[in-house]
Structure formats: C-alpha cells, structure tokens
Length: 107
Image 1 (cartoon, rainbow, N blue to C red):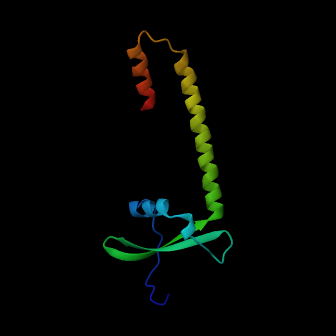
Image 2 (tube, rainbow, N blue to C red):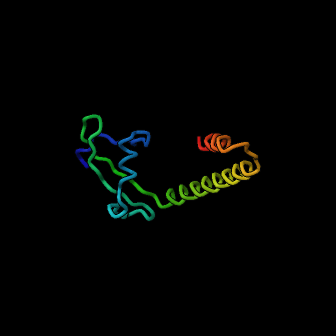
C-alpha cells in the first residue's frame, strides 16, 4: 500500500465498470474482516492506464437492491395485467387492427 498514490470511487456510469460488475463470478469474491462485506481486486486498463480496481460487495446493499427489484417486478406485472384487461375488452374489426394495437403495447 505504500506505493498507493490515490484512491477514488469508480462510478457505475462507466461501461467498463458495469461490464466488470456484471461478469464477476461469486467465487472470486473474498470474505472481508468486516462482517457482511466481500471484495475482489482486478487489474483494469481504462483510459489507456492500467489501474487496480477493488470491487466491494455488501450483503446489506445486495438485500436492499433485491427488495427494490422485487418491487419493480411486482409493479410491472400489475401494469401488464391492467393493460391486458384493457386490451381484452377491445373489439377489433379485423386482424390488422388487432396487430396494430398489439404493436403499440410492445413499444
């Protein structure tokens, strides 16, 4: 650590960081001395500069993210059911009208 010049947080708006986070296997993470935290160190070349990135995983953050994702899924499912009910009540003059309406829901 004596050669460490500086440390900063890498934002997930950077595509390289998003890619790294989404492709890291769970088996690579090492348990930390702090309960509920795991980490992995990766060497990444970003902006033509070789850097060492430390990816930290928090059990509390993970559980919170899963709860939020579950809420979003429930909300999307509810919306889809409402749209389906609305669509199933419509009368169509021909198959082309039904396809046109279906395509507006897919967008």
